[in-house]
Figure 1 (cartoon, rainbow, N blue to C red):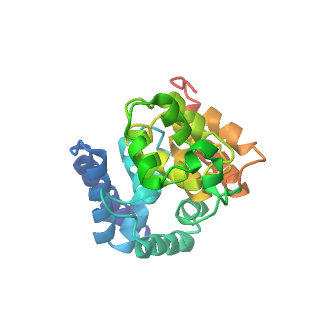
Figure 2 (figure 1 turned 120 degrees about the vertical axis):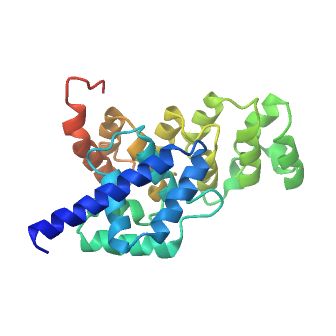
Figure 3 (figure 1 turned 30 degrees about the vertical axis):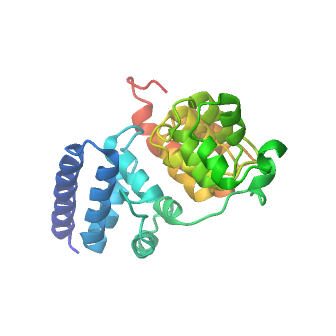
Length: 265
């Protein structure tokens, strides 16, 4: 392309992204914003959807910006009731690869946790290991706080989901489990998906710094962490090398914005 053609194409991308941003800002419910963005990504031309993500997740975007938060949530969990389609992930990865965009490639690549708990049920207290699963799921909806605290070590995702919706469970409990080592990866995924707790900074920090968190999930949590946390993660040898590399690059990409007089990091 000639320079005028490139400028014209960039203008089209910028205009379509602005229109998309306005549309998403008008949707109050986060899950519905995710669904709309996912639908738009599926419908957009290949070059346009890659350009959207590269811009949304680029150096000019800082934690807390609604469009960036929505994009990261889509990459983590898909839309309102469906996962991020494998075909779309593969296509975006190919486009990022063609653009030599290692930053976005890491966000789209699957990677296992550094450590894995092979027997999640072993962490449950002997008293509760003998309780049938259906009963444990019912107990997770109950009011007995000592029992609820013991059930937080349950490896069953449904038990954990019920606990996360239980008003007797508070952030302190969730942070403690999100930071626990060892812990089932299914538990960490349920915590991240929780509407009550998944967006809280202390919870995200604990998840990102836990070597039992699947690396693909931890990578997508880095975008919502402050620069100081990214610095600590980049230096933490217990974490996956890819995660440490991404944390350092995320920090460097933000540096021009975060080093100004308005910076509080």
